[in-house]
Every structure is written in structure tokens, then in C-alpha cells.
Length: 544
Image (cartoon, rainbow, N blue to C red; front, side, top):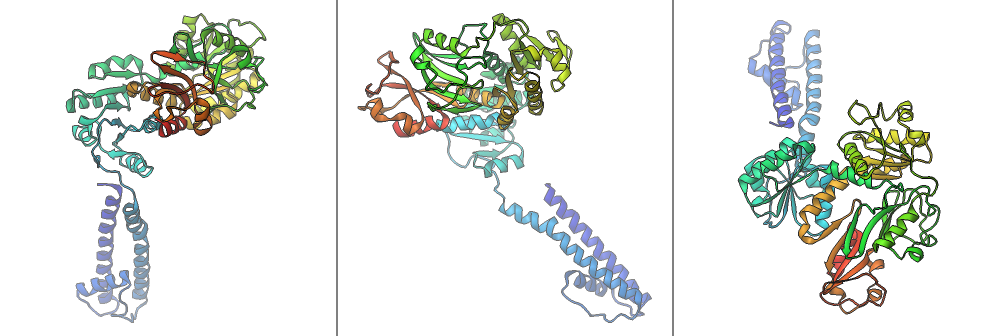
């Protein structure tokens, strides 16, 4: 019984009780004070007529003050009960009638779709990815209100229990391409077990919150177990822009000697303050700048007049030697790296992963955390200036905020920036909606757990599509474009029409990377294209 039904029952029972009580009192009053005895049914009729305003005066006038006051009280009570009925009964009834209700089963024949069990923040990124590749999906949401809200917002969702055989059957699991279990660890293992009961062959992908529980997801039957926090930690560690390492970090190999990489611009780099056109990047290194993040916003292609600063991250392609040369340009020339100049704030799963990455790369660091743990150098609060001073923030070159609470991250960013205006701040965000606030607080680079994990799920699911997902709002994909066959890159004008950049052409096993406007596109060529989700979708709509 839902809330509206319970309120209705309580209202009706209470109304009947009030009417009967007034009928008994009226019947007694007419005998005791008016000396006009009435049958109880007549007294009940008078009360009902008064409450419903359908009739008055059958016993009027009343001679005694007691009965006159009683009738006045009865009139007021009737009016109050009528007005109570509006918010208690009628308004909810109208709202329910007008509310968009999520179905309890898929209403169309689906095949090769993705069943997403429960909707989390990373689910929004996953759905965006699936839609960009025109892959059908069904969200199985056990909470009625959440399911109705998602349905009203246009998501393909059913209201069902993902831990039940019936719920997964209603989602069309036997004909699905894969299932994603995205809830708590315990619920996810239950969903995987249920999925195996429905269909032994369906591919199951389970998200693990605590990495030490990964084995139990595998024992439940999950084909793939993903740990988003570990991926996020490695990504954040890779954004440290000190000159300790000459490795390129996260890169994507397209050919024998051709890569795509993300290179952050350090605050002390000579590139800071220059525009992309005046930076000399293309002339001095020969790399192709595919896109760039400016304070978390990705631009592809970036404007030649865009000014580079300490929060800019370049997405570039080129040979290994070209990328190494550009990385040298992005690093600070102010001073050599010294121990203690990298501070990790927060030593949960993300922070521990960052520290493991630093340890394996020989990068010195100090750690601040609320709790005393092995490897924690200072026990304190990330939002307290004295504790941040104690861990060495004032002398640090880079501070990584690996906190699980976005409000704490925002405040800690403000404090760190106040203590050390020149420090590079790399921050983790739990929710995508808080990324811009953390940037406004003073962070140089912010990475959202929801974005990283959503893209990781999509990349795992769409592995047959040869999707290469980056950490943020950009994709690099291999795709055919027979609609461009017989034209040159210059004639196709792909950048202005889609915002995407063609960075390589694969033809008969060879990878062409020296691309000019005169390069022709032939039927059967595979183009390696970089761009935003919307840009890639637009490219495929126009040319694939």
C-alpha cells in the first residue's frame, strides 16, 4: 500500500468517525436541549447534509444557545474536512493521473541491447556513450519514484527488481548483449547470480566498490569486474606534470611509431601565457594538436587564439620522439624536482592507488589523511590550514586532492590555493556536476569518478566497436567512412562540419599519419577520428 492509499484510508476512516460522533451528539442535543427527539438516522442525515453543504434547515431554527453553537461548530468542521480532502485526496490523485509512470517490462522487441541494473551517476555517462553508438539499453530500477523520474526524462527504463529472475526477464536479458551490475558490492553479486540463472551465456560486467571484494564478484560469475576508483587513481597520478618521468603516461598506439597522448601544461612552462598559434608547438615538434581542455572544457579543434595556462591539457598525436619533445616544452623550467613537493591529500582507495603509482615510478610524496594508517605522514583534516601546512603544502609543487566528499574537495582547494598560489592542484570529483565548482575554487585539473567509470564501462561493453576512450569528454575511434570515398580531406571539410579531427588513415594494413588536405579517401579506408561524443556521433551520421 503506497502513501496515497494509506492517506486515503486514514481520511475515510477518520471522516466516518467524525460524522458518527457528530450524529450521536446532535441526536442527544435535540432531545436534551431542544426537547425535539429525532430518530438517529435523521440526526445522521442532518450531519451529512451539513458537512456536504447539500441541505440546511430541516430542523431550523434552534431555540437554545447550546445547539446554535453546536451547529456552528458542525458547519466549520464540515468546511475544514472538505478543504482537507483537496491536498490529501484530490491533488495526489490528479498528480498520479498526470505522472509519467515507468513500465514494468520492455514494451518493444529488443536484441543485442545493454541491461543496466540500477542508475548511478556513472550510468549517465554510460548511457551517453551507448546512445552515441546507437546501442539500445534498458535501465532496471527498483525504486518506483526514481524509475518514474528517469522515464519522464526520456531514459529507457523499467521499474523492476534486478535481483529477481522476473525483473531481468522483463528487461529482455536472454536477448541482451551484456548486463551491467552497478549497485553496491552485495547487490551486484546478487544481480550477477540472478543473471546466470536467467541466461548462462550473457556477458556480465560488475562494478566493484571495494577492490578486495573483486574475487567474490568473479565467484558469482561476473565475466568482467571493474574497479573505477583504481582507474581514477592511476589517471590522477598520470596528470602530475613534474619532470621526474619522461614517459608519456596514458597514450594510445595507432601505429608502429605513432601515438596519441594527453600532456598537461605545467604552471612554470614557457607555454603558459602564449596562444596556441604563437606557441610554436607545431613548428618545433611536428605534433598535431587534436584538442585541448581549458579548465575542464574540451575543445576540438581548439581555437588558434586560445591562451594556454596551467590548467590546459593538450590532446596531441605524433611519433614518440615528437611527443617527448612536446612534453619537454610543457614542463616547468623553474626548478628541479625535490622530495616532498608532491602532496597527496586523502588515503582511501584512490589515494592509495596514486601512491602506488608514484612508488613504482620513484616519485617522492607525502600523504595527509584523517586516519592514522601505514604510509600516512600527517594525520589531519584536509580543510584545516594548519594540517595542510604540516604536510608541506606551502612548499609543494603539486597537490592531489583524492577526497571522496566534493564539498571537502572544494573547500580544501580554496585553502591550498590560499596557502600556495603557485601550486598545481589536481583534484578528484565524485560527481560530474561538481567539476566546474572545483575548477572555480582554484583547481588546475579535475577528474570525475562518474565520468571515468562511465567511460570505462562503455569501453568494456563496446570493445567490438574498437572504441578508444579517453578520460574526459573526447573519444578516439576507428570507423569506416564510405560516404567520403572519392573525396580529399580538404574537400570533406570534416573539422568545420563535425568538430572532429582525422588523425590517421588505415589502408591495406598501413597507417597514414602525414595527412594534408590533398590526401584522398578511398572505399574501405578506416579513419582514426578524434572528437567529442556529439562530434563523433555527427561524423558517423554524415559519413559512415
